[in-house]
Image: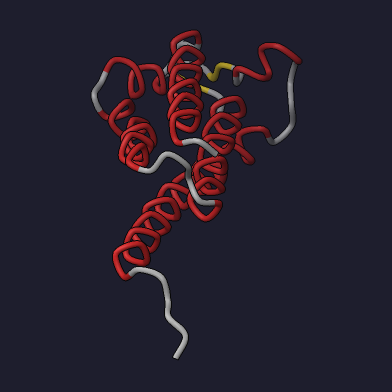
Amino acid sequence: MRSSINLAVQAAVLIAVLLMRAAQPGWLLIIFVLTVVGPVIVLAQVVVAVFALRSRRLPVAVAVPFAVAAASLLAANLLLADMDDAREFPSPLETVVGPLPDATDVGGPLLLVWAAAIVWVLVAMIVKRAAFRRGPRRAT
């Protein structure tokens, strides 16, 4: 995958997440849109994609965790319901298709998958960079 396409995908996911959260009232809206905490956490994905621009093409070991991070963040955002002090609001997906049993129970673990994928991306980038600095292996 080209690193520029990866950056565009990561930025599109970030924008979609922020727009979906902006459409849902509740605490997640306050955390993700009106404070610095949410965007900074989610921007980590885009910032790492910007660092990946150094290479024109991403190796599979780096592209796969980027794809997992984008898919899991988008899926978690679609499934997580929002709430305020008085009531719970449906998730963005439930707003479109109706009530889904256990949607939030799936959305929470998807956030853990997203966090693990970001760590996976960082480790893969560090390993690939170290291998590039060592140069090609020579037969002995």
